[in-house]
Length: 362
Image (cartoon, rainbow, N blue to C red; front, side, top):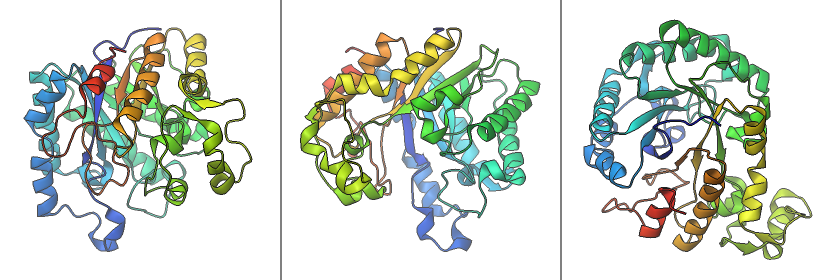
């Protein structure tokens, strides 16, 4: 497999321009507003010191998530106050030798906190706006080759051909402006590895393919408040663990008799089977670049269990020479799935062992 040079091991940033507050609790007419408090958050949540610290951990890139409603004032019009902060962030990354993935984390009509009554892949107007947004990003950052564009985070469980069509349309528009921009496209069903087989693969060395890894969900999202199953189950789960003790999760929540029929333990073997589709993609597309753009564990899980899980996932990725980006640096209280790898007060990695693991020293 070809290398994703400069993007071997990175750190995701959420909670800054995405997942920083819950828009759905606001009155509909106020959901698109950027307030004074929001601007203060943008100025203080991530600063040059944070970028310097991420570089000191040995990372070579940062994946920065942003929401469409945060960067757009109205369709076709960017919020200059927000874009200037992204400009500053890119300059900090350049200063500390970090490459950047700009990731559209929540697009209007796909996984967005503000509902517009239409789905992205079924609405021509939303699709035109999606393509236009990326073209405006290309115009703004045309002179920054170290910046990759990740077209859309976690496409829903939709018809993959509809997503392939929109991705191809966006790629064609960007290629007219920049033939060498690094463009990242992910699979459907929230970037599941087993949906990589549906992705259109291009004869273009600057297109990168991505997937996410959160299996087993009941461990990585344990006692999470945003998803009904983990909220209902409300159970602490270690890693590794004896599957037999947790089979009731499927019986009581998923309505199945046996969630993991081939396993006695949830451990590295489990992780490898979950990620097996990624190895199939590599075998079938040896000239393509595959990048694991997101994986992690909810932060209130015991740090030893988090280390165990991250070690197993990264060991697998390194065995198959798959570059990766961990999720995530810091989380806000509004993010019900807080996956922070640093503490809130001092912004230092939660354990030196975790720092070693995410650098790939497994």
